[in-house]
Image (tube, rainbow, N blue to C red):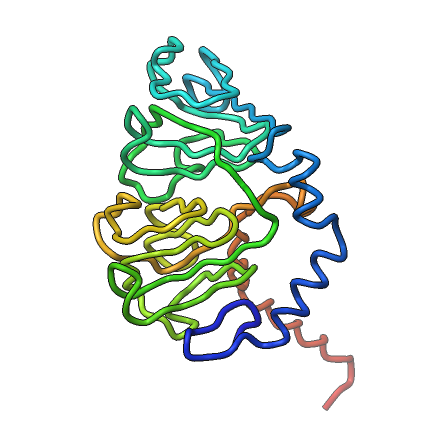
Length: 257
């Protein structure tokens, strides 16, 4: 069993506690960060994102440091690429923070398919800063609406496959107790994205999902608390190359029988 998750029928193991203690001892504690206003959601937080009309950061450019319900009001007919200088942000394919959601962490996004791989939408029409209120992360997933049925608890961990940890793909309600999370319809952080800020989500309609299906979840990281930076999908292992040709046989020596 993985250190960072457990089902409701099991007690929290000491490994999880030790893991959390080690992480917090290596960096400033969450209360100290919040008191200093250094959280992305705190009073001293700064947000900045640059939107470009065309791919590869070309064409008209607009800069945002606060939410925007309609990016076309900034004289952008469309968004072809973007750069998040400080964040994280939530993007949407419709006006007014509705429609398909995209998590935008610090980094460069030269094409629309770098911020989504669901292939359902290539537009981005509104966006807002995301609050990251804690360095710690805890999430409860429930099989049925109203926080009923089987339950899975995830603590300070990313889960690329719920099936791989013995939980089904049906997730009909969610409690985000600490931190900000993003769920995906398919394993390996693929497909449509669903953002879970701190709070209760009694029904999959609350996170604008077409069905109660989530197969992978991960944390949205605050770079001031996690020095390794934001999440990146690991590259697939390279395919093995063809076997080398066998060495040629040595030439026969003169006079050999």
